[in-house]
Length: 325
Image 1 (cartoon, rainbow, N blue to C red):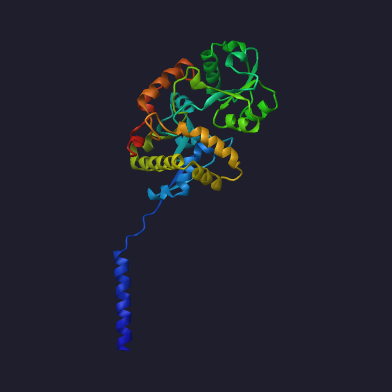
Image 2 (tube, helix red, strand yellow):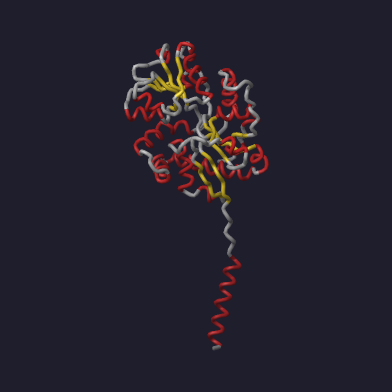
């Protein structure tokens, strides 16, 4: 009995020592991020961050929200119903001009994705004179179209536009339009895979500066009062996109494993053309370069997307991406 009691005491002592020396596991903070569009290769770095638990390394549990047709990311952000959102830089500028207190904290891509995609028999924007061009209806579409036409020496008043929403691919494949505004990395690649010969006239090839089309955004309050959270989220995503660039094939698989219905052939093709746009001129990921943003702000005003020049210093906070080594 005495021996049994001694053994029991020894076991209890070991358990107590183990419990006393172990640190309680830190709880993961839930963080919501709404995408700008349905998941596609431009989001590969986000899904790689999830697949490799980079959010957990920052003590976060990142919840990716897929937008629907009725999703208004800007309103969700302002109402504090989500923590972060990926916004088109033009939408961010328009929202801020309307008084929204939103700030860009990281570039997702480093160059414009906007383009006019034209039928195979349209080899130059000048050939669009007298033709019908489809636009999505997004406010910046007309400005992008005009910028490309003017940059090519064409007269914007000589083209007709019709709103088609996000149906550029079927409309162009059916031959109902001469061209449509779309993204060269998405619809442009899709058309090239399905029927080679379409032309993508990229806006920065016709006078627009090189600017980050998609930007990770948060509210002014979050940036000011929860800077460590912003830094952790930015670090998670930067590391995710670095994984994408290090191993595109694995990153494509990460995306496909978490998003059903994607065409692996299309994902690979889109990611391949997108890779150079994921790095800033100095090779870094996520960077918000002040000089490039100032050039964009001047172009944004000149094209009439906004009525006042965007205040780049107030609109973007580059310190979070810059802090990631």
